[in-house]
Image (cartoon, rainbow over all chains, first blue to last red; front, side, top):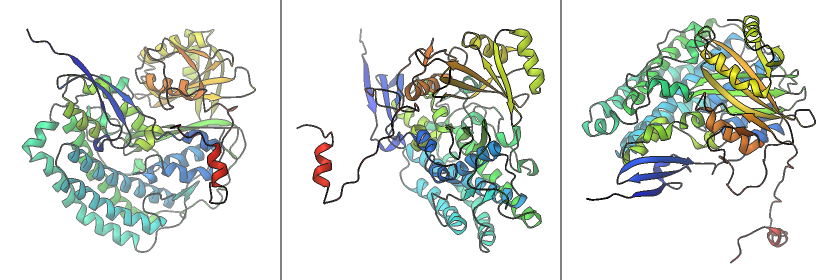
Length: 369
Length: 172
């Protein structure tokens, strides 16, 4: 009678497939995962306490560094939280600009995330660069409006820091012409490749009930078949004006999460096209002229959230009436989505762990904060 | 579902549980007795009309100089009714103990560990309350308001030796 012995192995923290400095303490029986314990905090910089010694506006560039792929989405969530706390109105044109930036961020994030996911499956190089090529084009657009490519720091309380430059809309239209070709190509890379399909289908299944009890959000939740999108469920900004669909998966495996992200890029494109049509008629300027940037919100607390590309990004702010937040808490989607990782990996092989982690799409800057 | 109806529902089911309630920017906050937290949370989750099944956010706030000093804040969302309620529970400075919500929502596990790590709140009934972001051998809870903010002096060539002499480098 042959006996097997359990073995503890560390994957990471310095491993190319762990998306940053992230360690998984894996208990294996042969190649099969018995238990998994994520260990992180290597990038911890006490972001939340840092925010308590800065004024509200000084925190805006710090939010860029949370999830460094989606600086615009982080800016939006933080600006919305302060606006809710201080009761600041946002003009219509500013909201259109915000929506455009948020949707461009979503396309950018998914393009890169899908490239990384395919790279995690072992198809080295080409797929990642496909995604990165599209990401570069969007970063150029961000540079046009904000002057920075990644750390945009573009949002202000009551609007955005400056209006769109004249060349932005023509360039955006040009981007939207090329984007469907890229999305089709990206989808075909996984859909038409039998080896990759074997590594994605039926792997890392997250059932609906488990996903809900872990408060998972974003493409991971929708991949599990729950049609929950904050843009539809609780429309913030102007999302009630746009016509778009919420894609859902059937099983909740890696393949479904891939397809949900692909379809979300298409829906973001639809929103962008409607934005371009409606923008010329929008009222107001790029910022509310009455909004003070050195805000002193009344005593109280507020929680505001957006559908960031990775899930529900929320900011909980407590004000004591001064110009600095008394408490500043980030509800980071990467951190919460990582909670069911052990449940998703149990019973699969060591090689699948890397793919499952890639399909959750985490950024350690946000997990460790 | 609106705030007043919800407040009445909770008050009639658990008359002694609510210490205070307030409304700010259209959202309801309930300050609860710590011992009633689990019951009220389970009531909000399981009652078919209320259906607050989604624990959005969990965090601790340090009100230094106030009694009780700490407050643990829970944001519950009813996806069906699209309504949010904020539960708050106080914890004393001496022994900050709050019941854990992990039996009701597995998502509370890591968020409570974070609150323990950074703020030093103890959660009774938590399966494995250990540090999550800070190193395991760290002493203290860095997000408390009475922790001094340190800084490192920048080393230039003229003061490098003086600064490096005080730094805790690893011994050979």
